[in-house]
Amino acid sequence: MPFIIDGHNLIGALPDIHLHDPDDEEQLLLRLQSYCAHRGKTITVYFDQAPGVQDTIRRGPLTAHFVSRNRTADDAIRAHLRRLKRRAANWTVVSSDREVLDFARRAGARTQTSQDFAAQLSTPAADSPDDDKQDIQLTTDELLAWETMFAKRSGPDEV
Image (cartoon, rainbow, N blue to C red; front, side, top):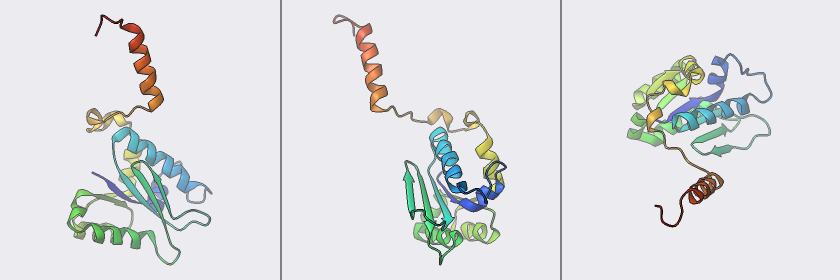
């Protein structure tokens, strides 16, 4: 199940990233990128606009939106849920904001507090029930290395 996350709320719930850090959003994105890779999840995270940052960053299954200064991340999350319509039931919204969580529930989405998700971020991926379903993707270089290794082991008569 994919996640929609209120980024600054989640940063506030993490013990090792602080909102006053100049690179707090980047620190969170790195953590979420790792989470996506290890758990096979898709995440869309919203941040209130930070100066000098582009509007959208995509890193595989992780998408970060920095909303315009005249809007809040909360507004963007509500708009995202409205666009999803009935498909909102397939998503989990992560926030500390009671109004956002209430809106998400009314839209049919699952909800999780930022504090609960922060604890989940700290839990090793081996505890994930989806861990055995994870599809490992090799880079082209890794694939070529394996092919070369196995080609050397088998001769023309072996298959």
